[in-house]
Length: 257
Image 1 (cartoon, one colour):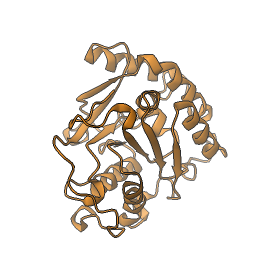
Image 2: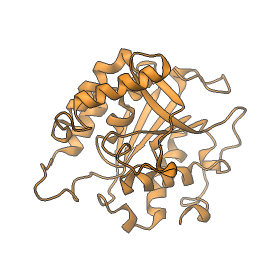
Image 3: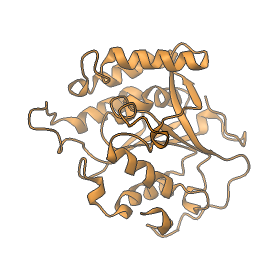
């Protein structure tokens, strides 16, 4: 799929990191693309920062098996490793910002990903916004921890991205489209691992809406079905020197506010 801008990392040799706030975000937003990466031989790792149940309204359906659902979805997509975090659901802003950065930095140091996917910073969900900020802080261009990262992209999550205010700084403006037509059945199978989280039409987490969004995004790029992304940064040229022994928590303090 993606060819490295340097041209020396073939798809089957790529390492791909997806960072999500809650279980099901990773499938809703980037599931088809992760399945495509995996099918092409890339090593795919998913970090989910919170189990994502605690803040549900009392009348809402609750799902005590979300970790199991996430593991099942990862197997369907071909994800090689799933890491579950322990942040409090819908209370990421109650944590010191460095606590959001640390698990991302740890995986950058260990996994050395070439491509990183994270939330859109304008999502209606505050946890999503903070995951974007933490990812950007950890992957800032001059960080030796992120020396391997050649592409940083944001994905959209139905029921969050489109629910943001219609203001310029919240807008999701895709400029990268990934053809997921061949793996669409795989994405739908992974979504069904989260059956308790899906809605019924016309809810934006219904299978019908998710399929319609993929068709719309595909039409924007001349494809049958696509997942859309905003490219935050792509590097053309050799990687800067890596520093595997850089201390944890080394993100620029100016990015922690």
